[in-house]
Length: 127
Image (cartoon, rainbow, N blue to C red; front, side, top):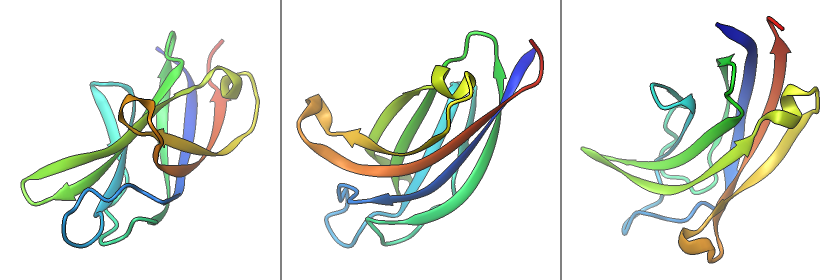
C-alpha cells in the first residue's frame, strides 16, 4: 500500500564526465525507489550539460526512504554509467523543500562526474 506520492523534477545537469571517445554524452537519468520499478528521462543527445525539465511521479511504499539517481550515456546497443547518487528522502517526506544540485561522485570518491539539479515534493496519501 502506498503511503505517499513523490514528485521528482530532473531539471538539468552540468559538467557530466564525458564517456564517449568521440563527441559528447547522450545523457539520460534513471531513477527508482525499488529496483523493480524504474523511471527515466528522455535522452538528450551530444551534451555534457543537458536540460530535461521532466517530472516523474513515484508511489512511495512504507520503508522506502531512498531515491536512487543514475546518469547514463546512451550508446547503440549499450550504455555507459556517468555516475550515480542516493538521496535520503526522509527530510522531503517530513515536509522539507528539496531544490538542490546533487553531485555525482567519481569512482572511489575521487572528484566528481558532474552534478544534477533535482526538485522534489512529497504528498501524504495515507498515514
